[in-house]
Length: 244
Ligand SMILES: C[S@@+](CC[C@H](N)C(=O)[O-])C[C@H]1O[C@@H](n2cnc3c(N)ncnc32)[C@H](O)[C@@H]1O
Image 1 (cartoon, rainbow, N blue to C red):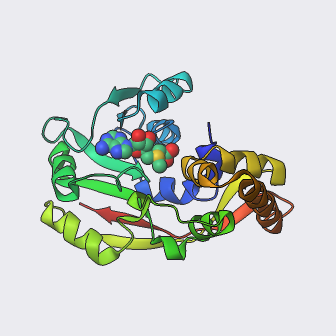
Image 2: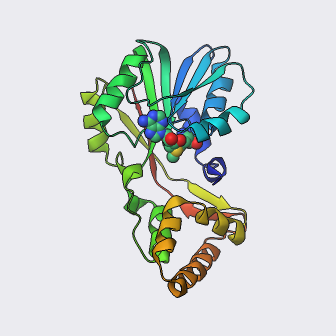
């Protein structure tokens, strides 16, 4: 599995601080994936409780294996529609887990209902693909386009503002986060990490064998150019969006 927590190592501190979870909080972590943010929120919320929700049983299995905190529970459900109960949480957080809703207004309305009046929503979302070096140079190097634009659906603050206010949230604030993404300790581990990602795999699979060899060599050369000596790094651009 791609080591997403390692990739996020320079962003996570910013996100955790912005979440501002306090002792006793009841927290919902949407699209919690492998659970790093859930566990950190639980450490901040103790003796409160954190629920990590995800649609992927595989991700939740990974999260459960890495969690021993009794203040955490994991839930296999679609956060867009699941009935969490009204006013169940003080804070709803998500690190890159809320960009994939088919009906964003309906989904955020569902999350608003799960929050108590005055409860906070703090989510980190990608800015547009063009602002994200990692999302441009990998497909460019392989020689194709990544087709999945879902990670970037909340990149435009005007769109996010419209979605959130239509869902019943107040005017959101946006904090730009420009930190580096960590792809691996050296070129070889970064190369193996990229090959674990679905979209590079799909692009490479479409190439003729000779072209694929050429693309792999180009990928290694590009990763080598991003080797800082202290890890293979790419620029990134995200928003931390906060509202109530
Ligand atoms: C990019 S991953 C981020 C995972 C995690 N937040 C992290 O930062 O490590 C996005 C996650 O959102 C989950 N997800 C997508 N749509 C969802 C939904 N409607 N309800 C719950 N989880 C969802 C995916 O299964 C995936 O685990």
